[in-house]
Image (cartoon, rainbow, N blue to C red; front, side):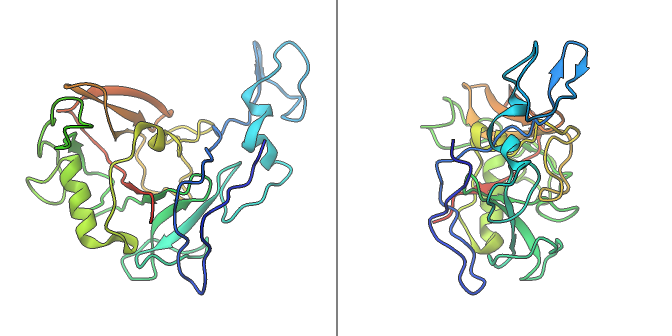
Length: 251
């Protein structure tokens, strides 16, 4: 198994790496083994006994305990890099903010995706909600959904499509190709070894343990979401209002 992620371009003099898909997937974040009586105290190195072949003992997360190469930082097998408002790469100690060199996005160095970071106020506030709406007839499941039915920064624009458009207008992290993530993309940043929220809050702060819409429609009436309390994925009616985290794949 290959544990390292290879990106298509590299940072030169503070210019951000291009976030192109790498063909790699994140592991689950599960590093605890269990038996029928509780935690397995033999640790991730062992694979004996009555409960073998558990996720905790295999894959990128287990390999991280003995060291795997990373572009940035992150717990277990995850590998994240902070990106500034102007698109440049930051140190892991950088703080969130609105200045050009402040942290605003996080790049997943395993998948190559760049993610919007939620804020505590303004356009990208963690407290805002959006109904599911897409005018793309080829991907919306046969119906556009519900327009402007959430509660957000710009009155009347509280649906998933308009939010993506508004963020693109701001040029977040030097880009204007932000979009709704697919169900699989959104699930890729869940850490199933955590809960409330099931995500690394060092690189994804201001994440409520709540429902985040994906851009994947199930049918005319419903779309998929990821619940960041425990990291499970189910579907809801498009008229329901939930949180959104945008993504981009770079150029």
